[in-house]
Length: 283
Image (cartoon, rainbow, N blue to C red; front, side, top):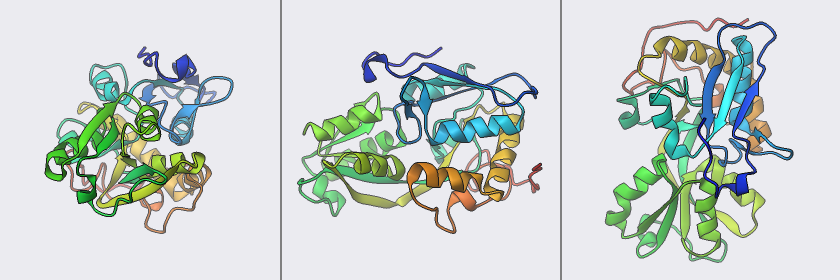
């Protein structure tokens, strides 16, 4: 089992959840993992364990497949290597589907859209354009798509990148004044700003809108397709919309990924996409 760094919440996070999905088994337990510090997608809950959008989403997926699910918690940077090593069947953590990742992984269609956004400390100089980052420090979660973007653009815009094992550590760097801003997903940053009056949302990178999807190994097309069909059924019956409202506090837009069943299997336009037409088998 992957273990969280000892620095993460002083060990308060449960290292695994084994959740009964249904009384009747439809196969062996699904093995998966999240970054258990990425609120409100997955985070420690009172009394132990992990809760959040991802936990509810994939527990329901497993229930509909009549399978149990085991959800580990680990640093995001180690999740994809662990899956590729065979430890997990897929990742329940929200993973941005990019062309580079899709070259070596299979993705479901997106169940959420993500957009990169900066989060700064209240009272800091405003961020209105990327040139405002010159000479400043931007914190990111190590191994994330935000880490990749920041490192690719640091030289162009003259800022320094600091990578942290967890998203809370990256946020703490902003609160402590060690970083000017954290670059992360819009949902996580909105959650952090809502719960911490010292923080405020800043400039989004509107051109970065992308699918948050579940990744699989290249040899797992059948399981990818099975889970994607369940996700499509959960879109059609409004389940994902309800989970989004519960955890993010607002109704998704009419064209949001929570409401949209995309054609084929996977993310249209990315490697690994299967355009085969299908009708999800819901029941």
